Length: 311
Image 1 (cartoon, rainbow, N blue to C red):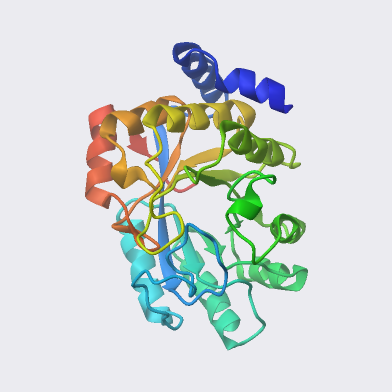
Image 2 (image 1 turned 90 degrees about the vertical axis):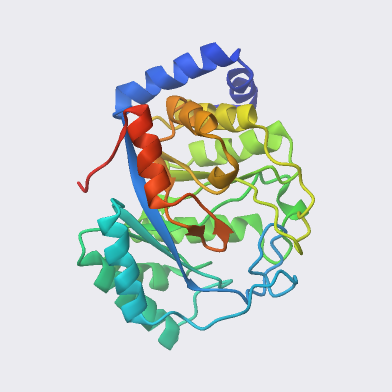
């Protein structure tokens, strides 16, 4: 789908856009079910990158201290709690620029093996990986690897200077070649234009196959980061992005991710109507606040929707 077509789609009158998105959604997904995912920060802070949105960068004073890798028993306890709360995917995130072949990576592989035993989809987001590292993650039983594009290629340098856009593409290629599902999305509300957002979406749509899951994040401005003064994303802009993503990527799980704590129940409901069928649940999303399991279950109950069960 070219940029002109994407823009025409994105700018449709909202009732028409939602109708088209819901039509596509129903053809490929159960519109009344949402996958619950849990994201655990297994290694916080101290990242050498300069991503302008990220409170875990060592370059910014955000009150996030660098910590060592979490012990295995803590990860197992968190995975058990996530499963009890209805999550079917458990994602582990480490504030690394790239994976290194050392004892910490061996410990992450042990975490993947341990979480897999709970009949959960296992996802990791650890930064850049080589082909050999991706292969080792696959052998350990990982389901998916998250590595976001963040924004459109032409806006990328406004957000990050410590790695190139193609570095991200290379990691995604390694993940796909290892037979691991791809989880890849981005963040809106970083000062980019609608065209920049759709440019990112076009990049995702050009992947063959499409990413199995696409997180759509709304920036949560954090004091101390370069983007601390950004205005919140307009709710209708978020709904339009979700709907356009759903139409463009019909079978992908579209995950309503960061920023939900700042969204009303009505906005979240509109996003579900627009085709979002996955959310992160739990009190924190790495370092930023997120709705609790109880709040999410209450919202789904109010909407007459339900959490997906393990496949």
